[in-house]
Every structure is written in C-alpha cells, then in structure tokens.
Length: 639
Image (tube, rainbow, N blue to C red; front, side, top):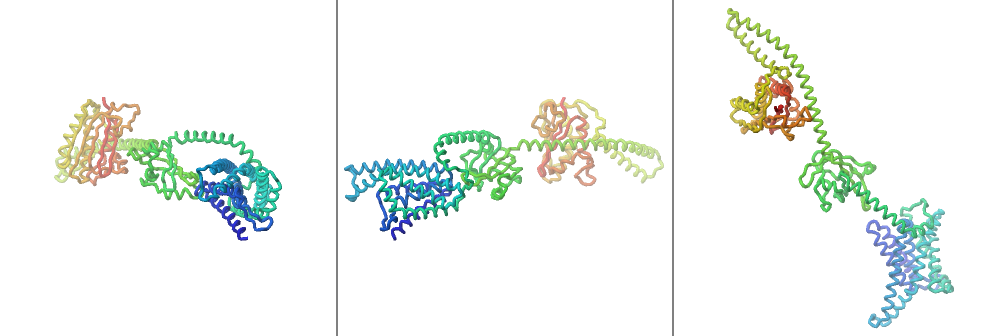
C-alpha cells in the first residue's frame, strides 16, 4: 500500500506542477508550462518502455508508472489548454508534441545504435545492454505511442466538447473524456505495438482499478482548477471544430498574416505619416514608442530614453504631474473617453521654439500591461493667429473708440473756442479802460493768461479731432528729427543721453512740420518723464528713423493690407524708463488720461499725437515692458 500511496503522490505532484505552471504562464511566460509537459512526456515514455510496474498482489491494482503517473497528466493538461486557452493554443500544443515525438524517436534510434559500438562504454558492465534494451523497446513502441498520442490529441477535445455541449456536469465531462481517451489510447497502442488482443485484455484486468482511481483523482484536480479559470460557457464550439481548424490551419495562417500585414500598413499610414504627436508611455511616464512627427518636433530619436514630464509642460509652465494624470486615467470610465489637456507646451531638447499643444490621453494595453496613449496636436500657429486676431480686434475697437471721442472732442472744442473768443473780446474792452485799479488789472491779466492756455488746449483738441488746420508741405524726415532733437536737448536733463539714428535713404513725407515736431517732442518729453520716474542715473533715449520693413513691429496693423513697407517711413522713439503695464497701454491715447500728478499734465499729449498722425494717414504702435522701458513706432506715408 505504501507503494500505491507513493504513486498517488507522484501523480498529484506532476498534475499540480502542470497546473501551477499553467496558472503562471502570463507572469513568467508559457515556456515553463510547455517545458514541464515535454519533460513529463519524455520521462513517461522511458519509464513505460522499461516496464516499471507496482504490483501489490491484488487484481486490478497494478500500476504502470509511465502511463499512469506521467503520461495521463499530460492528457489532462491538453484538456486544460483546450478549455481555458482555446482551440488555437490546443493546436499549437498538438504540433509541439508531434515534433517532440519525432525528435525523441530519432534520438532513441541514435542511442540504440551507439550502444553496439565498441568505443562506447558505461560504468557498469550490465548497464549498456539494459540501456540498449530500454531504448530499443522505447523505439519499437514509439511509433505505436506516436499514433496513439496523435489520436488522443484529437479525440480528447472532441469527446469533451460532446459532453460539455450537452450540459454535462464539468467533473463527469472531464472524467468521461479521460476514461474514453485512455481506453482508445491503450487499444491503438496495443494493436500497433503488440497485435495480440489477449495481452491487452490481461493488462486491462490487471490495471483497471488503478487506472480508474488515478483518472478519478485527475478528474477531480482538473475540475477544481477549471472551476477557478474563466471558461467560455456559450457552447459555440462544435466537437469537430478542432479537426477542421487543424487541417485548415495553413489557409487561416495565410489569411491571418495577410490581415496582419494589412493592419501594419494602416498603422504606418495613420500613425507614422500623421502630423499629430503620438506617444505611448508607461505608468512612470517613460515613452515606449513615439511617431516620427513627435520625435522630429522634440529633436529626439527613438533610441533616446525620455519621459513625458521632461518634455511636456502645463499651461503654467510646470512639468506634467504624471502621477496625478495616471491616477485620473485609470479611474473607471476615464480611459476610453480620454482626458483632454489644453494649453500644454512641448519643450524641444535642441532649444527650438516652444510648441503649443492640445493633448488627449487615453488608456491602452501593450504586452498585457496598461499604457497611456497621448495624442497631441501642434496648435502653435493657430494660437499665434488667434492672439494676432485678438490684438487686431482690440486695435479696431480702440480706433473706433478714439474716433467717437474725437468727434465729441471736436464738437466741444468748436463751441468752447467760440466762448473763448467772447471772453478775449471782453478782456480787450476792459484793457482799454484806464480807470481800472491795479488789483483789477492783475485779475484781468490772470484771466487773459488762463484764456491763452485754454485756447492752446482747445487747439490740441481740434488737432486730435482731425479738424485742425494743417499746412502740408514736403519735408525730409531727417530735418524734422534734427529740429526736434535741438528743441529737446535744453530740457532733457543731465542724466539723460539722447541719440539719433537716421538712415541714409531719402525719406520725404508730406506733413505739417510744426505738428510733426510737436508730436515727436511730446514723445521725447514723455520718455524723459518715464526715465526720471524710474530713478536710474543712466537714462537713454534713442530716436531712429528708417524705411519700414515687414519685420518692423507694428507693420501688421497697417490700414491697407496690400501696402508695401517701402511706402512708409518709421520713426522709433525708445527709452529705458519705467515702462508700462499691458492695462496701462490700452489707455494712453485716451483724451485727458494721464499718469502724472495734478498740474503736471493735461492728458492730451498722446491723444493729440494719435489724432495728428492719423490725419497724416499714418498710425502709431507701442511696445513696452514694465520696468524695462517703452518704444513708440510712428509710421508716415513716404513720397
């Protein structure tokens, strides 16, 4: 009985090992599972050929260790592969065992022939004849075993599917399959190897109880394992499907390869040729694959190892928080719909221009591991056009607002100017009276001075309203700049350096020289005040006159899109003063707006300059940065 228990333990060990390797095939690979099956199969052939038996002296309890403890579990393993992994994996296992049988038969023939050679010896004197007898027997029975095994590999799935489709309980379906397969296997083996049926019946009578017990135990272990595995319960497979699929495998393989090639071609067309940036990254952000557009945009090669958080930044110019993104992506319901991320930035490693992106992250699977698929579109040009469009809209709104204010200011200035004429006439009448006292004359003088200042302000309002009277003549811009510089130098201040730069090209404009000098003088005085407000000792103002070009800042805001840059002269006034904030720059041309203290400015200087340049069919553009200075660009038509 101890020998029988030991055989049962051996059978249990083999079957549990097979099931363990099968359950771990996704973690450690399927190679361990297939190698264990091959090892037990070859060992079973050798043990069966040696005729090793356990005979307890009870009829029916004889145990053939090769067939019972080693070869029977591999039939149960085939059944597990067929049920759990499907028909295709079962076909692969069948082909593997056929190749193993052919290889074993060849090696057994070689070893048998080597035992007769005088140059081959063994440690024991009787070992060589015994080894030769074992492999000779194994070789003789291998053909029978090969045919029997080949039949088993087809009979076993057919019988199981027959029982399973009829809703037979899993244990009885497994037991019936193993019993019927064992009977067919032993019958075919006996008929081919020893065509005497009396010996077959004798072997069945001597071993039927041991075989029945071992098959029941194998069925129980297999049933428990199958119950823990996901099984297709639809019953859609027919019993003869494995035979039909096996013999049509070549055409299916050809169709499969053709389909794979077709999908590879589609993949190259869609992914490799698309202009979008596509990345496949793992949970750590490490890029596993990227399309050529992404690599080109980032200045990388596929051989380079990098992480997404190293090259992609958020709208706040911070590296991507990939851990948080991965957490959001793996939430239920998030992976399929995708997670949009707008206003991203890609930073090329070669120091190129920063790329603005609209990205979407979806969840995928690669080599049975979750990955993130990042699809990003380069929207740098679109965002630039949107910013330019918004800037043009702001410029248009500003022009419309200034036109409305100008019309209002013009009407007020005309009415106010009529009132001033009346006041000045009255003052002239008072001055002709000689009986005024000294205090009265002083008050009349104060009124006259205030009226003169008010008249000057009214004149500026009329100029802003485009209703002022201009004396248009041809003037060289260099002469206007020189005259303005001469007027400004006495009031510039000690710590301010004025520099003028005039291009040698002829730059003739048709303008009112007095108005032009007033415009540029006003810009210079504002630059001086900005430098003094900053408090730096090294103040610098640069006046630069040149023919406009396409790269001159502000050229995009021309009134005529078809105009050529050479048709305009650009006078630039740049200072290193306190500069202006973006909010302040939207208000500087508004009438009566000033940042200076009470009594230090009327707020009409830049408004007058804006209206005057507009009357001369030009425009003014401003660029400034807080704390770094400002630059005004005055464009005038060139004759």
